[in-house]
Amino acid sequence: MQKTFLLLTTVCAMFGSLSAVAAEQGSNRGVTYRPDVTFTLRTDIGEGKLVFIGEADAIAGKINPDLEVSPGAVVQINLINGDGATHDIAIPELGAKSDNITAKGAATSMVFRATRTGTFEYLCTLPGHKAAGMFGRLIVGKLREEAKGYVINVAQDPRSVGEPVGTRASKHLTLDLEATEIEGQFSDKSIYKYWTFNNRVPGPLLRVKVGDTITVNLHNSASSTNIHSIDFHAVTGPGGGAAVTQAAPGERKSFTFKALHPGLFVYHCATPMVAHHIANGMYGMILVEPEGGLPKVDREFYVMQGELYTTHSHNANARGLQEFSLEHLLSENPQHLMFNGTMDALTKMYTMEANTGDNVRIYFGVGGPNLTSSFHIIGEVFDKVYDQASLTSPPLLDVQTTLVPPGGATIVEFKVDYPGRYILVDHALSRMEKGLAGYLTVRGEANPEIFKP
Ligand SMILES: [Cu+2]
Image: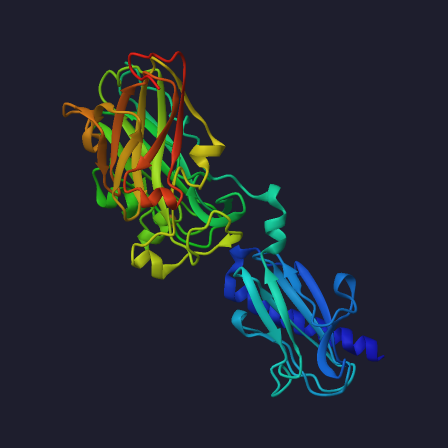
């Protein structure tokens, strides 16, 4: 009889709290009537103190056990009164709290979504009970971090440069883009909740020809929690398309434009707070080739510089989920800078390779959102720089370092004459200490007339 009552109160409390969670998060968060994880604790007097004791499974018999959950999980904590004094359980930092229970054997529960990663205190809020020993830790994120294979790679492959337009006539094209919010691998041991176009940072290099008519279809994934949009710097029209593409989660928005100007142009999300959407990864580029196409080269690469603003300072060994910091974004002080979305994208994950004698072209842009790049390749000189990515102005010749503003781009070309590893940097070199580097490996015969060790 007592057992049935206990079960009923638990189920009622669970049902009520879950409805509240569902209402708060909106139906698109996929909250179900079953929690992802359940813990049961019993209050007791142990070792002369007041404590919570794990009731079942891995925490059975443990005093004030660590409760480990994955980020985003719906968590249910049941509490059984084991001593006949009044108690409750709460996690104030996550806004979760149960009812009071007084009778021995009475039970209650609380249900909440672990929306933030980190370590949070659970405790009994009755006066003096925490001091008497009723507190422990809820750890959000540890499990996910250990399940490494699960994490998504968001880094963009610099070799993904699309198909040259060649000599074709202008035509009507359709470009499909999806806005997503995904946890991606940021460094060896850490992850970040990226916002992306097509699950990559930067988004795809889109390749069209001047005079083309282009229909853009933007789909905001149903699993998103934010509105997203797209502003193409190549578009002549309201907001570069942003005025007509503000898409709620699950929505699709389209527009059609004519590419009037050749050049290499940035695109990005333009939904408030725009700087936040860009920092989280919502940028890419569209190349509008001139009539007849660009001259053929041996190797082309796609590289974009970005910034990440997190609560923790740069640390190559940072573990777990890195969280966004508004304060650091507004002070324009990124903790991390990276080429192609992640710490090791162009040093470990992808290789940029060429052979001596090759002509190399790099489509380089700055997603930012804030810092101007002094783009440079250590040990190389750019033969040509299409300054500001203008393809109708004559290129600059023989350039060491070129400025690229946020929301801007450049095209550089150079012949690789000597084998070795050449490092792409922003010559504001403090930024290399925060992760900004990429390797171009050149293979072939060493010519002692050019360089002699
Ligand atoms: Cu967005």
